Length: 370
Image 1 (cartoon, rainbow, N blue to C red):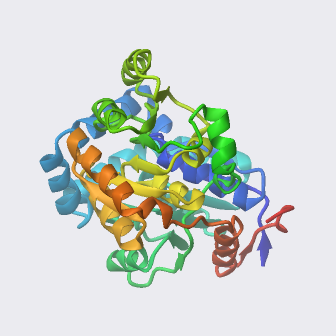
Image 2 (spheres, one colour):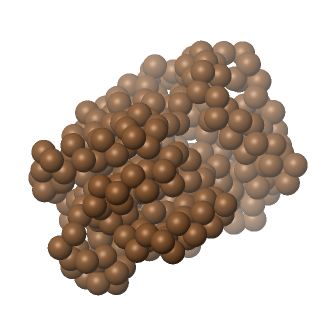
């Protein structure tokens, strides 16, 4: 069995979710792995165009649903053509980086990276190629011949991969989460650091790195209902400025822009209101009840359904009054008092290691505390 000491992890900076998974994976690998952004490898023009197209689709639910469920999920000729175009642009630089590193393993946490890793494998068969897809249902662009191992986070995800490739080797693991969330402070410490009174109800409002959703109006309504509100605008600078302006007249509002304090802010809250994605698993690790806004179409609708199946979560429509009504109902029922945290930071990392061992690749000895 080969012991890993050189790896390349391929992420994609559309939003922040892929990057957080990549960071968690690098920590779990225990080697000096390099993360490369597939969107950046498209070049400035290609990357900006890709993000603009994605933002356009997200804002038009019917169009995005049609593209996802008809083309991406089924892998139509249009989807495969778009995948080939992206791969052609990404591949030369990715292959150059992998060769410079003399990488023993390529791990893709972004669909375009999966295509490039599979192509790399064709000319370098000794390199282990792996994909980790945290979506509940992997669409066809995640699944390629030439990928040795697929990591997914549910039986549903495993069967989605096998829908496209019945012979695929699939490992089901606990959702990767960065260790900061396992090390989150307790509620009292978090509130003292955040300025939220210990004896008042508090809601954390966030909606991905782009701040998509009715955050401003929801914050105002929840404050009228007597809640303290921590609102994270992410990289949405106009939203951050509006929230900070609003907070000057509303002392119960605690606004943030892009921040690395999310674990602490979750710990300070009673309920986390967010969109469906990797943030949901982070909230589960901290032990906070989820209210999930149905605001992003396509694969995020599938993720929402899976989150509801896991429990400790409610869904609401993507308008401020719906958010307000759902949060009130959660508190009225006492749902927020019946959640449990996940203290086992090493569990998913152990499962990650076992997955690689199944394809003959041993990770280094676990670091202290794993």
